[in-house]
Image 1 (tube, rainbow, N blue to C red):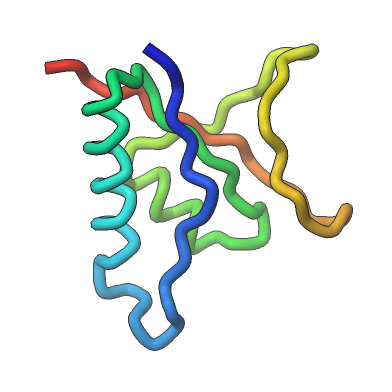
Image 2 (image 1 turned 45 degrees about the vertical axis):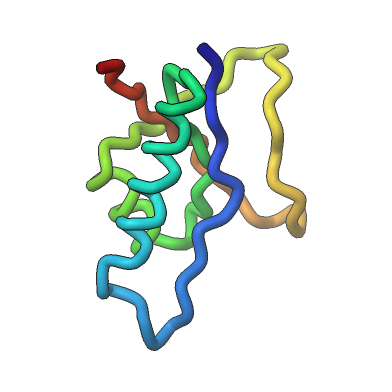
Length: 92
């Protein structure tokens, strides 16, 4: 009934664009479903268009966190900006 959170998806550079990240995200979604989660979310670096394309292709959408909501923020340098993305999970 909650929302799962993907904290990091990383693929070694020489193995990128081989479908590994898609499979990792799909496994995370499958696990979230077994936990009974209604959605899965993540933060995506605005300066990483490849990652944005990956997540959008997997059905994630950029969402705005409501004012006052308590949501985890990535711990990085202050000049890195993120999109918050979420995907609703279908229940079977």
